[in-house]
Image (cartoon, rainbow, N blue to C red; front, side):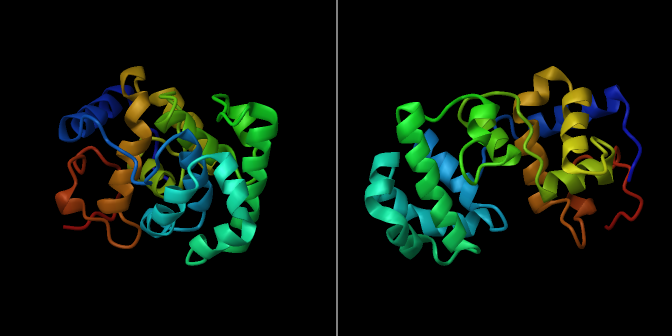
Length: 214
């Protein structure tokens, strides 16, 4: 684990990220807040590309909790069976849809606590929804962000909660809104797990990773 970078260096890093991509976007396809919740819940232990492929047809016929309930668990399974853990995920999609109808008037709540009460929605999923839909500066730490945070020294931590806190504590406020997407995209395409593309990295000179590649 790298040591925590100092504030001026982190500011420089995120300034470069912003210059390169001022408005980074998440790659999960969705039509509204509800389909975003479903897509993120389905993305656990799956790729965004795989989820998008499965949900394009699903969301065309079920873009509200009521329509998803009408489709039913077996109908959901037919659409998402290419995704890992699809049976359990389909069950959670139906349960969370029922809860949204019964407790929230079919509206997706905008609080982390309420979101985390939905079946299949953990803290990371809640943070993605808060960030992408409600524009809260929430930090959803996945494997990519965990790796980048620890390799670079931007946000070192022994677990995802520690990395989340380090981002919140050390990244300047003006960069908090997009920090999640800058880090996840950097980890997905540049700071990859097995052989990071350090030669193409725009923050390589500021990164503390010792085993840099060319």
